[in-house]
Image (cartoon, rainbow, N blue to C red; front, side, top):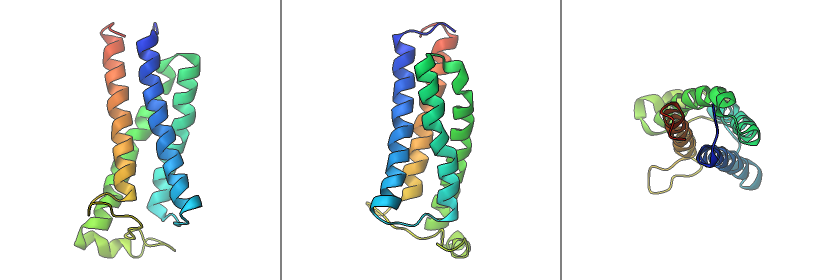
Length: 144
């Protein structure tokens, strides 16, 4: 696939999103001292490689090698959604209490009554999937 500046811009946006999400999770755990629960660790497993995947695609200027990033992000959306529901739905809230050393229903942050850490991770995964999908559609239609 022929790459142009537009393709590089899209890859840069995706890479920056994954980097911000990764640094944000590290901020919460390493600076704020919030111990990640098991579902948080799973979300990290899907997010952290995206920095390398999209960074490599950007460096090599080849969006085709970033397909694993789209797959990881898609799965990450579902993990984040489940984690968010464990925090917010009373029926699942009980199940989240037995998640591990740190209960998965713990809400370290709750901005505006709905913005929690899994919510932020879910938004990051959604942004990555949407940007990557738009990039693929533009490249297939020849408008990159």
